[in-house]
Image (cartoon, rainbow, N blue to C red; front, side, top):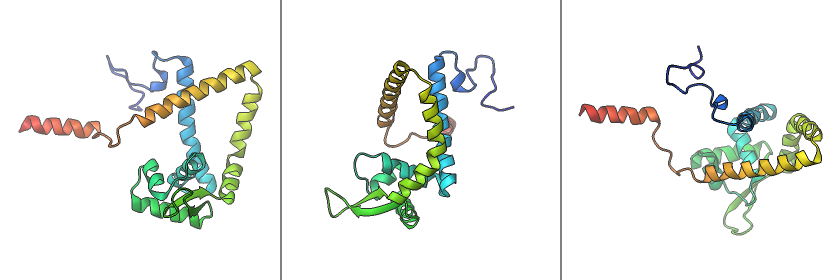
Length: 185
C-alpha cells in the first residue's frame, strides 16, 4: 500500500491535495502546481537536456534583471562549480549566451539565445495550444477574474518563496536522531 495514502487512527495522512479543510479551488490549484513541476521534466526531455538545465533556462527567461552564473546557481540551489558546468553545457548547446553585464562590464550576464527561445517555444507549443483552448472557453468576465486570481496566487507563492530561510533546517529525521542521541547521553 502507498504510504502517502495510508491512514492510521488519528492521522491526517493522505494526499494533502485531498485535505477536507481546503477548498476545491485550492486543491485544484495545487494540482496545477504539481502538473507544472511535471511539465518542466517533460520540457527537459523534449529538449534533450537535464531538469536543472531546463530550470536554468526558465529562470533566465523569466528574470527581469540580468543574471550571472552565481545568481543563477543561487536560484537553483547549486554550488558555484556546478553552476559553471551548467552554464558551459547550455552555451555549448546554443541555449544560452554569455554577454557583458549591462550595469557592470566586469561581470558576465547570461541570456537565452534566439535559438534557445525558439526550441523552448516549439517544445511547449502543444501545451500552450491546449491552455489557449481552455482560456477560449471562458467568458470575458471569467477570464478577467481568473487572471486576477492567478496573479494574486503567484504573488502569494513568490512571497512564500522569498520568506524561506536561506539555510534549510535539518531534515526531520536528522532532528529526531539528534534528539534521541542527546537523550541517551
